[in-house]
Length: 311
Image (cartoon, rainbow, N blue to C red):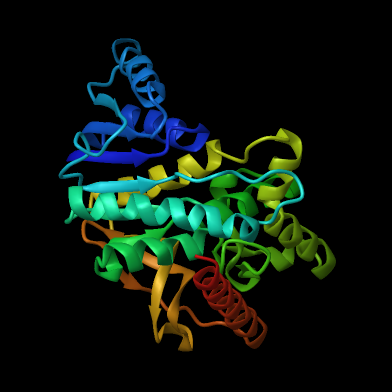
């Protein structure tokens, strides 16, 4: 068990994240930090008081500063403004970059040895901001995206084929957005290739829905964006780290030549353990997948460059 995990941002994503981590008992303390006075304290206390009913002993603390967060083993950054209908993740660029930079500065001071998991959008670019601001080694700063995108892809396949999601193995790589790359060649149902169940057009429709999965939820909600599935994705990542499980999960990681790509964050299969990203796993891609991954990397690089111009 870890000593302390901090979640920054007490909105829907952050509060739900805190809820999941507390019930999982992956740390002795979970600290919820937000600038809004009383909000993190109230939500944390409410959650803490559910412990006797749900059977967890995790101490849950709310705070408006980083004093309570000092010495955290893991910091999850969810702070930022959410999307509204019609907005892309990139529309959040300047505002959220400023927020994540401010948060990262505090994390650097209060928890210099922490592993940082970024959830704020646009995900890949905000992960770069956290990496650049903290100066932490790349294996300790990475983003949640691939686990969520893969979960959506698996959900849509299961719904279409009327099979259990537990039997679906898949990988979604690339940037968290319209250029993400679901790998059809690695998508199986109980080991059987997806292509034996569905034709090319049906598979492409599932891929398209996966790419637009976040926007579909935003359209329904009108205000705000997804939080149940994103918090579940981070919880899986945290468990892999806390238990040193060496799980292979798709994460937004800093590229240093893997897949022929460098100097950007991008969703790739990562071995997650107690040190964070312990290895980027290079899988064999067909020509179409490789081109799509390179295109996705170029989009992320371009968005990082645009962000640097805006702030």
